[in-house]
Image 1 (cartoon, one colour):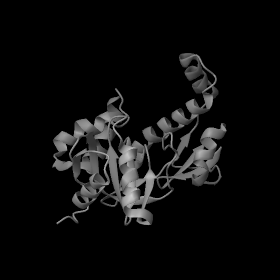
Image 2 (cartoon, rainbow, N blue to C red):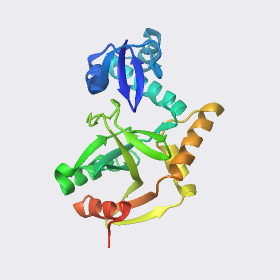
Image 3 (tube, rainbow, N blue to C red):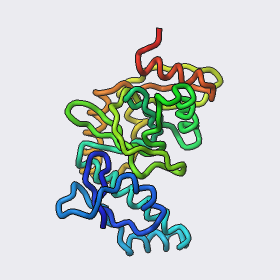
Image 4 (cartoon, rainbow, N blue to C red):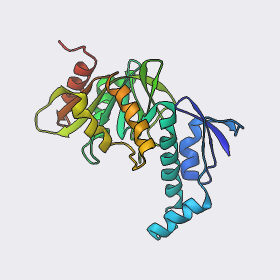
Length: 238
């Protein structure tokens, strides 16, 4: 096993395939330790179950990647954290998270932020940022589990807002209530039938929804959509 620093946590992981090892390289800090915050141990039996289920050994490296990510995010609940399926972009050290159903264009939208702000902006995590409630504030972290484009940074930034995207011809944005937000967030995170798991998840979601504002953005793929989202979520608009 090797030791990784992910989302401010010491994580022992026994990665064996280049696919995941390469993506986790920026988070590697050394050899494993006796008392990590968590241990991600993907066994041969775990991989075999996926190989048999999908009837393919060809994607064993990607199975490891998905199993490691699932294990990490499940254990993250023990540290006042959760995963949100989102693209997280940082501007002026503040993180803005954009979530949506697959294919809606969340990565395309955050690319507009990079065009709008240039060197002032970067992608923290393009698919599954870790969110943690720490010292009364909500922070987003980059992780090795960052989707097909592998865009992530081993950094953290305070969350300034979360936004759910819907495609539209004209751009508009509105703040939505915590009650409206819960259902949307549950669709974009890891869920379980286990009561203890859901209790921890709902605790983190409650902290999240009382710490930051949540929005719904109806948008096209013009750079004006990024400008509208930033001005509203950062409260810098006229």
